[in-house]
Picture (cartoon, helix red, strand yellow):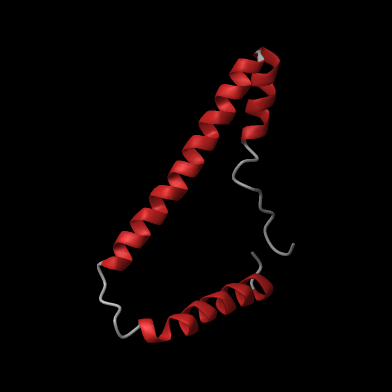
Length: 86
């Protein structure tokens, strides 16, 4: 990996989970379930907001080019990963 060192968003959870495991298994399960529910809930909420926002825009003319737009988005993301120091 080039550039700045990056870590996953869940890395800060590791010390918390180790400490919870030292307390008891119930605390570990509670923290794990809590983290999972809020993570998945946030992803679902953001997806729902995105879909509802897109529905507000008139896309009749753009639908003809939907495959081109999607392919271009994948291409741009791929180039960003290859060329940018992220």
